[in-house]
Image (cartoon, rainbow, N blue to C red; front, side):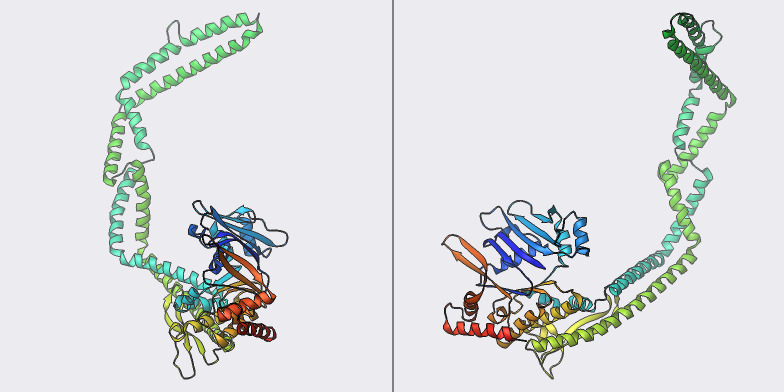
Length: 560
């Protein structure tokens, strides 16, 4: 439930605060006074898109703020806390939207800036807004199906069907891909099989080409390498009288003699010992290197032949060595698939058949549930229409079987017979504008009874358009009945509807000739009687209208 709505610099409204309690609240005012801005402000705090053009002329920004009930432990509460918002101890949260005239807009919920999309996501659980444009829902088969599913409350069944549809579509796509490209795929697999045999015959290893190049480089310059290695070996620990090992060892012994008199030199002596050991170890490794060079004089030819094989393989595949190895994996998979082609094709056909059977089974359950709900919805809306001054109208929710699609295996159509003996026609064609408004109200009331928990907020924007007289009184009475279990906010231009309100809010504009301002205030007592009289006659102070206004208020108080 919304507790209050505050607006600043939004359209013609400079500043306004509306207290919204339980029950029915009606908003009235002259055309152009700013009733739309009240709804715009409400739209902002429910996550609708911000429009800089709605900022009051001369202001930097507009602000809409509301205090909203959020049930602790509910999904909206968890979603807001996940976004960083904090709920107050009394279970309310403050929602604030700032719309910049030239700067970015900002959404703050519970003291934390959150994305607009998050607010819109949770606001769907707080508020349902119904305007004249929503009558388009009665013109679309998809929207009519959504109305029926919302009334039926079989979300789990709808989700089950959606999952079955996705599974069948995926299975069908895989089967079609295999069947339609069978010849080309098998020819490609045969070509890849030859490539795979060629790769496996050579058996290249990762980075082998680089390793071969390095080894060939050494062997192609073996004399220079041998001379260098041998010279280094001789200088370190050869037959000469003075070598590196001999010199370092002589230095170590000399320093050892000195260290007997100065212990501070012992560390340096140890370091010289390490140098001697290291030099001897290097000399040993160089000797081993020379032995290996001398052990295989034909190795260069072998390595060059191996590199030629690798180069030929890379030219064949059209890739470097890494690309060849990656291609081998793909080719092996394609060949393996080709080896089991018949078995895979049979398995995919079985999978598609099973998925289709599952889809049709869930579709039958969903259709059965929709048919049962359609009968109940038809009966409930008919009962509502009887109380909305349409006693002779008969609404019917019909289902027509179609091939399974993403939404089910049936098409939903809402039809109307406006009077006994009249044929059923699509509701958008059979009903006038005023009748469409009442039918939509009847549907919303039926949905509220089954799909929405008590305390939900409903907003109706001129749901009484095209309605007058007895029908208008019936609309007002039904809104008042809905407001016994839900919070209802109605923007109306009919006194017959406003007379049923628990609180009556008026939007009135004034101007000094250069600046137009609108004020929003609640009226009661004689002020309310005068506003109802204005709605009735269009003139202020009409005694006849005043008397009629008092009569409407009295009738609304005694109405069952």
